[in-house]
Length: 270
Image 1 (tube, rainbow, N blue to C red):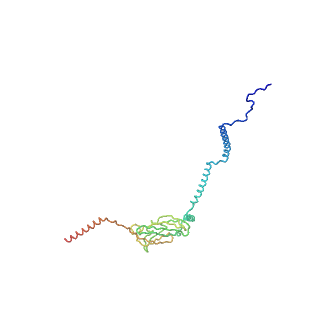
Image 2: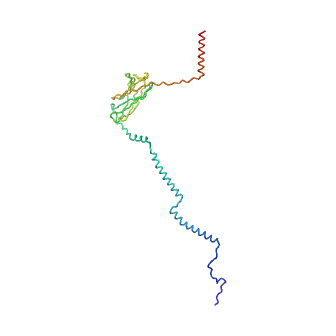
Image 3: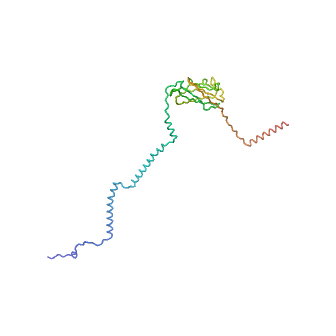
């Protein structure tokens, strides 16, 4: 049998190698390889960031804010301590206030003989009303109530043997008041003397008491009288300053006076 004939290329066999490729193909392959590498890196990095939380600036900002909040909290916590620091004087007042015991409540009425009253006069000027301060304490009862009234109290003012004023003639000078009197704490109240002598009608037509030394004597019913001395001072005269007259008016007055004197002398001569 005759062998089939082959074409001119059949005897060469298949080609195993190729010649050099264009440069564009090489660059295209490099780009594809780079994209593939980046894709792989992204697939690895993104899950890791999701797990670890990453170093997001927002997270860092949160840490900074948290640190700032802690600093603010610490500063706020230290502020009350600074505010709570008080001066020695304030601390002493606070301790004194804390050490002051509460006043006892009154238990019934005071026995008249248990009440001790002392009068004092701080300032007195003739021709003016005078304030008399009464200081009251009990001798035995810790605290009780006492009624200041015309029936339970009397007072008078004297100068030597001269009785100047008395509440017997002026009972209205004893106001009705209920006072809490204690043994360990002084209670105070005030009375007013009009500054004049008293008469049977307690009128206002009597003379003013003159400047000098006086005694005020007070007593509770069944109690021991107490006396205090004070000075009734003379009032200080008001100082009047004359306004200087203008020079022109003074000169005119002097000229008129001189003219009148000359006229008088002429009349005498004539």
